[in-house]
Length: 105
Image (tube, rainbow, N blue to C red):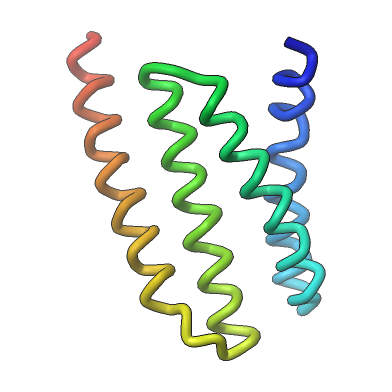
């Protein structure tokens, strides 16, 4: 239980710090921070269920798409299309999330 709480507390700061480094032009540091941010996201998915799990899948897709976008933009890694796939996947999961959330009400 404590490990789960630590993961939840680290998740957003890692994500924000990653994006801050990207904005400040520290691409390599941003990419290094993407690794634990995505890993924590995957671990959180494993600890959740139901609608909350869908929320965490959406966050995972966004973080992953964002990281491939960073690689394409800053490193010219030609990962633009991988980024697009994860964004589309996240949008699809978002639609499912909205439909399930509306059914609950």
